[in-house]
Amino acid sequence: MREFVFTVKYEAGVDVVMDLFIEHPDLSARSMEINATTEAVWGIEKIVGPAGVLEEFDETLERVANDPNQTGMCGASVTDFEYTILSSNAESRKIHWLRREGDGPRSIPFVAVKHIGDGLIMRTERRGNQYRWRLLIDGPATAIHEAVRENLREGLSLTVERLGTPPCLLEDGRVQQTLTPDQKAALEAAIERGYYEEPRQHTVTEIANDVDVSRSTFQYRLNRAEAWLARQFAADSLDADLDVSLDPEDIEFIQ
Image 1 (cartoon, rainbow, N blue to C red):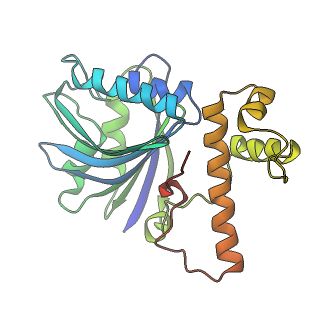
Image 2 (spheres, one colour):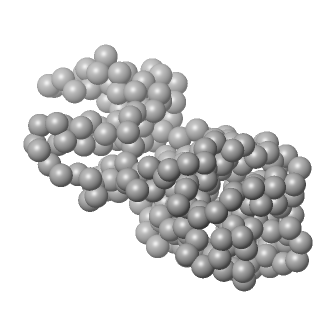
């Protein structure tokens, strides 16, 4: 078995949902499970980001679900799209979705299941202009690559990242390994302004104003940084076994 990793890059204005990821670098999505047959593809996806951006995501998803003119990434019409919000809080959504496509070149999951068949395993990540796909395959990847590359809609491009042993699927790839630059900057700003001093020297609102971001965005970045630090402390100092159970993105923060 090999892991086939490739990324579809979107230009702005091509897809209304991907436009949100392009416009808001703090917004990201990661699939928890994706399944496909020749007739339909469905999955569970976790979307994380600042509260205001998530509300915009909710509105956009509803518009997409009600738009009869939607097309897939390779041009086939979307004949059915439905979704259910499984859980929701200020910083995340977990969404179950199902979609079907009509005649014509279909999107990646349909192409993959055509060439791989039953037992197809997929994972996805979305951030910025990139929609990254990971497939576990037993056989050549050429047919999948060519079918997708030749039929991508205008404004989309395909980049192959790797084809080899699947460490990301054999390990728990959900855990954030390091801080993003924005999270690191938020943590540094909080430390520099005495946020962790006793008594506290500045509030989140004051620090957010200083660094010229919204309060919700700054709070989101700081929460993520603190969750990462908590995990590192637990792993380094408490001898906790965190391989499978704790995902910083699953921590529910009390505002």
